[in-house]
Image (tube, rainbow, N blue to C red; front, side):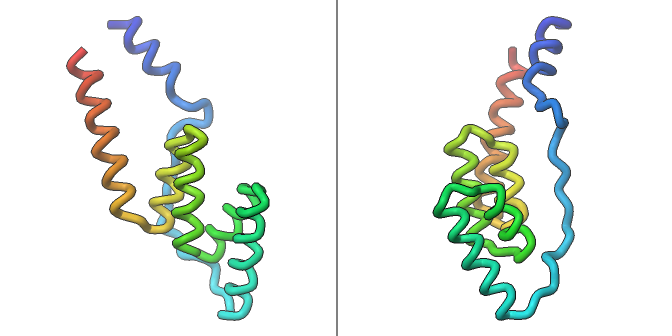
Length: 111
């Protein structure tokens, strides 16, 4: 049992589990928000994902957060993906991943 436990612990990211907050996006004027979203989209299209991420989180831009979540999945970073989906919010994508995670845990428990 100890070996299985040790193996599972190796799979936990060094920074620990994600912390999700319900903080609301920063209050911005409509013009400022639109300008930031355009800039975030440009960053995303240029492959500057961290800059796009910061802007999309700041503005609460749902479509951008979902695109980032999809990108993180393509990069095999599911914890970052679920964070983006949660912040979007995109409950359909969160529920899909929760179901998959439950299947993984059930399989681990069965072993």
